[in-house]
Image (cartoon, rainbow, N blue to C red; front, side, top):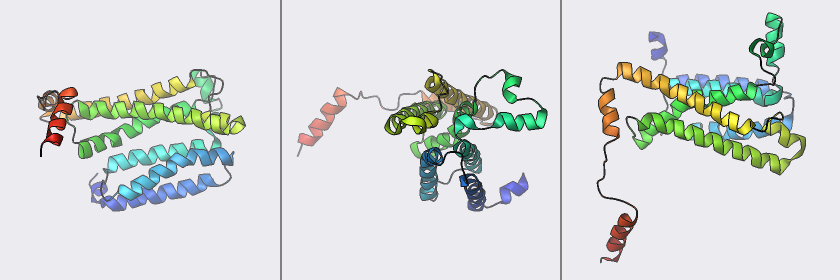
Amino acid sequence: MSRFKLIPHRYYLLILAALFGIWWVALAIHPWHRNTWALENALALAGVVLLALFHRQLLFSRVSYTLIFVFMCVHQVGAHYTYSEVPYNVWFQHLTGRTFNSLVGWERNNFDRIVHFSYGLLLAYPVREIFLRVVNVRGFWGYFLPLDLTMSTSMLYELMEWGTSVTFGGDLGQAYVGAQGDPWDAQKDMALASLGALVAMCITTAINWRLQRDFAREWVESFRVKHKAPHGEDELARMARKWKSP
């Protein structure tokens, strides 16, 4: 552990970036469906660009960068094969002699469900860092808001997925959605992302409850009303008076 701490922060980030670059190039070679791969990589590319642009203003912890790295690597596997066609059953059968689906009782390719769960499990903590360090939330809100944002972005992704499917249509649209005939696919994906984020925040809460001395006081303080004056129409009236005054 001491050796891990000695690695300079930005050097650690550079190592992860290099490893991801190698992984990305390897899986960019001959993907099963090039058009689907391109669609799947659009958001991934946007995420990498944002991390690169803002890393000087907001340098995440090593934990957060590692979680983001793992999620991005798993996502690239789904992009290479197309989520509904990732041959994890074949890989597992080569190792054990039987398919993974037969072992756990699955009837469909559930790699996409695993990644949706991983989205919440792996990215809720980096989102928590943003809320703590940029928005300066504390106590209960530092755990609830990352869960809330994960749920809302999961919903937005499903809407975007639907819109993309309608726009492109045909086999490309169906491959991108990857519903595999399940009419409740979107709802299940959102539920799994939410569950992953809930698990991540429960683990974070348990660790902080054990190690943070002012944990209880911070939670109590987070529920205290900070501004006594009402907002809404009262705030509009106050702003209107200020605007009219010379």
